[in-house]
Image (cartoon, rainbow, N blue to C red; front, side, top):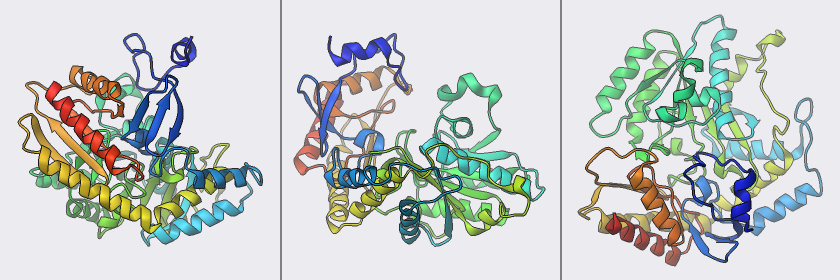
Length: 423
């Protein structure tokens, strides 16, 4: 039996209805933007394996940093101890983060980074004797699968089974073209009630919603509204962080900065699960007290894992190289050139580009569901042609490793055109 066949005996995959799923390709090797399965078939990883591998697979620079750390100190508990890599990573991030961010809290994935932020927002108010138990988020947002993050996500079929068990969250329209006034009015109405602890948002791009994009000027106004009404702001940069939008963080496009930020995915270059939630000094001070009960009681066994920190330090150093920054610019230019060619296609409804992110929406006669017929047909077509893309309904997006070659990227574009013609 092949690995792919043996996989079905034991493994339960994410976001998968196994009764209708086909056998999954078993990947045995990766290098750069390429992956190979057990049969030797080559795939271009055009979404950086769910947005985590900006520097490509089997990156030797990050691997060497991990090896050195594993043979020095693989792990030590962070409760009651610290270590050099956690300190060095914190110092490095402080050079890159907005100047109002002063404290870091380590966790292990994007959902828990969001969970920490939500818990901190609620307890920050509780510690002051203020009752604010609700959160504001965008419609169609996605923030993760743990309970607080899931409650804040607006993609209903992900959360339908848990409706009665979730934190109360109010949703406002995303301030895309034509919805700017509605978004601001909805937020203003909510914050005036003094019931909401925080506004949680994906800055500039809603990833799982289909790379929905909105301008920084609109987000600046929403943050200002929150600031004026003592509602904390949380930027979920799990997807957008570390160069995806063309800047290190999406919030680097803003004038008004969030109170908290959530980081993961590309943080370690796709090698070791790790996440960080960052805070302003004033939020940290809200937990700094002689009363032990006012501490933030959250953590897990692998908090600030030294090997993960070493991988993150190596990953950030790669991001800062002139070569990688040039790669990001060239991908952006390639996306814009492809957009100029494809946007007038009779089957294309809309296109959008930001940084290394490209998305197009295919015209349909009816509303296309998230995992509907068109999506599955497109996905299977891409896999058959050696391209890893995961369409969202009728939206096809590219978010490639920064090391993808021009030839590989061109093949992705050509395959998308062929897929559109096939629909």
